[in-house]
Length: 179
Image 1 (tube, rainbow, N blue to C red):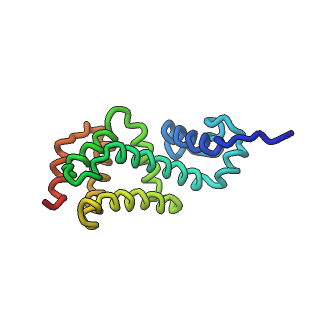
Image 2 (cartoon, one colour):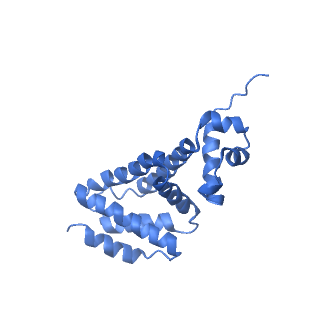
């Protein structure tokens, strides 16, 4: 029997892993659950991703790219006349608006790095990339502080089911950004 050429299979497996984590959490992630969700043979998941950590790295990287697209779509970081605190508060508002399933999934994968060392470099990439972007508008130390503050605000909103308060976020971000 000839092998079926399926260039999209790897991506379908990553997308399926994201859906499984979104529905069942990290604990529900297995090669078997992902294969069933992607409608591929079990061997396909282990062919493309030998370990679950490899699959989670790919899923976290894709989630990071989704956040980067939100940032890029707004374009405010490139314009030095844009109020940085307002721009950052707007990002978070856009990211946390409506259905939070995607954001919760991203943070679940991000926080999985606490117990899965293979995920730490990808989680670190996200923080470093964002800090590098912010450092174009401020200094590197302030940029890292802003990343930590953004993380903290997002986690508080997600963990408490609170409504995101853009005015509060703008105010505290503004206190960190030098005038």
